[in-house]
Amino acid sequence: MSVIVAYKYAANPQDAAVGQDGVVDWSRAKAGVSEYDPVAISLGRNLADAQGVELIGISVGTAEVATSKATKAAMSRGFDKGVVVADDATAEWNSTRTARALAALVERVADADIVITGDSSVDEGARMMSALVAGFLGWACFQDVVSIDKTDAGYTLVQQVNGGTRTVEVSGSVVVSAASDALTPKVPSMKEILAAGKKPVEVVPAADVDLSEAKVTVLSHAKPEFKERKSIIFAGETAVADAVAALRADGIL
Image 1 (cartoon, rainbow, N blue to C red):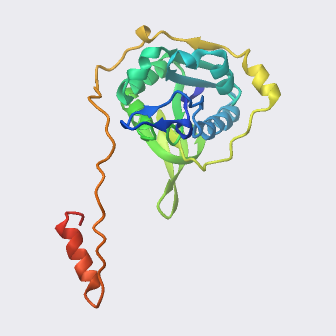
Image 2 (image 1 turned 180 degrees about the vertical axis):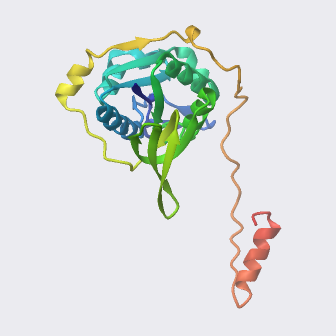
């Protein structure tokens, strides 16, 4: 069996700028492994070590994902090998198409029955990818997972919920997203970074993966409409009731 972790190599939005037309300028943003993914990778590494199996990293992105810098950054986190789709056309893909490509990469690993993702992605933060990948694979999906243990039937998951945690027994294959505070990921050493360059990374052409036909077209970009503040102050014994009435009149409540 193998353990698979889906990671994203993307630009950090903290380095991006928004123009007057509302378009985000990513030209100065530095790319790297999404800051949520090291937790997922460490969780996967622990699970793989407990079973004595390989940890495989999969990713879908532009041609940059297959560069030496990108693969070293990912493989140094603890992967044994990688499988990626690296094509500049992916910059125009929506989440559905990206998820279908990730599912296709999972299907190339015949003995895998678990996929781990980060809590979110550093650039979009939609928290949808784990569910979308699970949907294409036909596997169960659980989010906010803090620990994973292998069982004879499947996996035991500990999941964060309001007020605490709950333990879930899963039989069969599963996709999980790791909670951002599930553990403290290990920082790669220089030795691990250098060794990462020797780990195999298979680059799969986008044409070789089965893709969803779902499409989204961006028609325009615009900043949110600015509205002047009304600057109304409510006072007296009826202040609360007056404020609520005003909010309801504006359709806020």
